[in-house]
Image 1 (tube, rainbow, N blue to C red):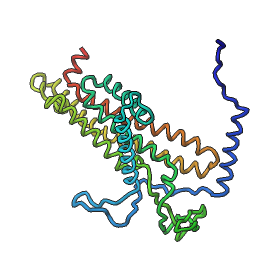
Image 2: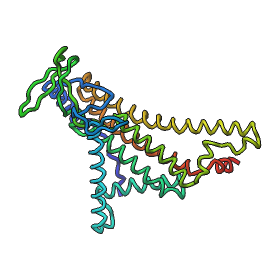
Image 3: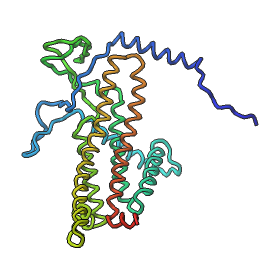
Image 4: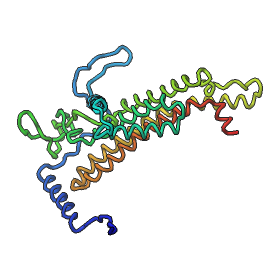
Length: 327
């Protein structure tokens, strides 16, 4: 048999595709000039009246990041129903979405089992849920129309002019208006760009880590936070153990901050980068940044889920077991 040579990149043919994309980008920019969007940290509210008000917490509004979260939940539920339907059909070899999900979940469970050992069945559902939710939330940002379609609101300063498109639709123009301009409040904005979303996930991950630690070790789990067993036997070392326990408490609270701002910072900065580059260098470059944003979204979802799994696995190991392993 003749040796088959691997296919090489034929620059002579494929360069015409690259050139065509650049030309189409130039034409598109001249037909519809890009507009620098309104960037703010807080999620935009789509309604003026709150959905409901709680006595201590305050008012809850329908925000665009809340809509993104609900859409992400619906997508995950839809995937679950599709996988269940394929499973019930009696297929021996999974295909399509069921095959992809089996590959992801099997790889995730093997990774959890190698880290958590016998507690993998207890920890894996949390790892898989967090990973899938953050992954879908991050990838939803790349769908056309997300963060670009929404409600045009009047603003007193730093607004843009608008032009009617038809049927009650308007387009924001690049020209800025000092007074009486308009800004866009998107219908859907990436959920990971909202601190409320990342903080909620961080609280769930850290609180459930304590729950898993308590379920696996019982009351003995809290000895790493309040270690006073040797304070009367060996006062100096016992006092040091007590201080180490206080540092462990601080460490648990620092995990909340680390979880929250790692995911929020990466995804919000990606949104700002895409917006600014799309205005300053609107030809061909944003397409390459979309690939980079896709890579960052997948990595951040894996990191968030992986850290949750590792912290839960560590919570199943008692303080005494650490010492025995060290000896």
